[in-house]
Image (tube, rainbow, N blue to C red; front, side):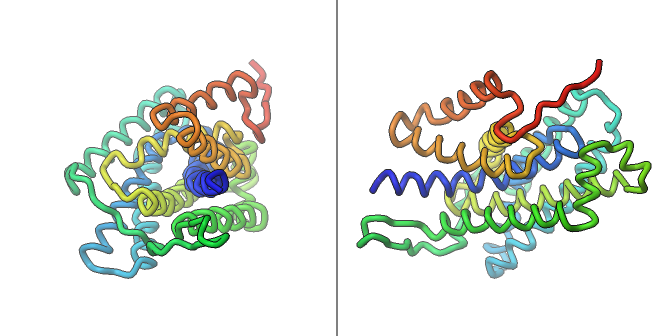
Length: 293
C-alpha cells in the first residue's frame, strides 16, 4: 500500500513541476530563450496570495486570482523591460539578464517580506481522503494539484490549437520572421506567452506552498530548476512533453526519497537530466532540429 501512496505523492508533486515546466517550455518554444527568473515568479505568486489571505482575510479563490494577476503583470513587465531589448542579442546575454532578474526578485522579496519563513495555509483543507478501508490516505492538496494539471493541460491544448492567438504562437514558434510577414504581431504574441506562463507560475507556487507550507524568498529556486529539468526531460518546447516530464520527475523524486535516500533525492533528479542529455538530448517528445551553418 505504501507503493501506491508514494505513487500518488509523486504524481501530485510531478503535476506541480509540470505546471511550472509549461512556463519554461512555452517561452523557449516561441522566444527561444530560457527564462531562469521563472522560479522567482513562483515565489512572488505564493507571497502575493499569502499576503492577501493573511492581511485582508480574503477567500482562497480571490487570493489565487489576485496572485495570478500580479504574476501576469510581473511577467509582462519583465519581458518588456529585460528581454525585449535583447531580442537580437547573443543567448549568453539573455541568460545573464535572466539570472540578474532572478536575483532582483529574490532581494525585492527579502525587502518586502523579510527572510523569516512564513507558514502557508492549505488552500484545499486538511481532511485527508481515506480509501481501501483507511489503508490509503490522500491529501486534498494532492488531488487539487493533479486536477489542476489536467485542466491546465486540456485548456492550453485547446487554446494553442483552436484560438487565433494560439495559432499565432504556433506560427511564431515555427518561424518568427515568416509569421511577422503574414501579419502576426510577434511582440504581442511573446508578451502573451509570458503572461500565460507567469499566471501558471502563480498557480504552481500556491499549490507548492500548500503542499509544503514553508514560504521564503528562495522557495521557488529549487522547484524552478527541477521544473526546467522536467521540461528538458519531456522535450523543451513541447507542451505535452512538459506534462510527461514533470510527472515522471515527480515520481522519480518521491520514489528516490522513499527507497534510496532522502539526502540523495535531488542528486537523482539531476542525474536523470544528465542521462537524458546524453541519451536523447531532445527529450521524450522533443524534435531534433538540424540547422544549417
